[in-house]
Length: 116
Length: 113
Image 1 (cartoon, rainbow over the protein chains, first blue to last red):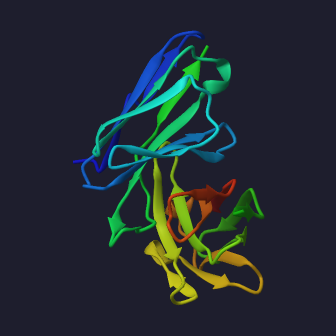
Image 2 (cartoon, rainbow over the protein chains, first blue to last red):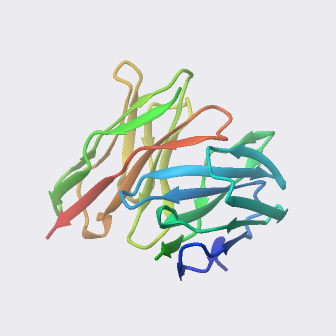
């Protein structure tokens, strides 16, 4: 009963392909995120959804498209993959209490994407 | 604007000796500050957080951190390192609504036997 689960854990693909990463959380949280961790371990937020609504969309190429079918799921689809997309992608969730985010992020174990 | 600087990219200690991981922050508002730990091939886990209550914050696994506004610092300490503490540690700053979290570049802690 993993709290935040991502699939696949590893993904190796060719440049130009389209791929998706799925994320599910069973914590009942309202907010979900996608983070990108580069080869130097630097973490940067890409997107954030609150109750299926996009609330943060950082400077990310249009080739990246998040989709939240319900508040427990946040998927990431990437079109026309490039070498620079190689990274570990982390899904995370957090809870709100009395209208405020509690500030604790719960992370999945990451999806390592390698573009050849 | 908010940002975090982790002053050491690598820290190496011997088992049983104290740990000090340094973090300085910059924030236009009263910040909330966090330390997360990442073990190899794992997701990040919250160690502790400061949200304008007590300035000395205790976390899991014997870690603690002290918020010092005058020094804009939030250093992480542990009195005695254990082999299982070897991991990457991230200092994180956020604003009161927590919708955005800004991560430091990480400090890799190595614990020697």
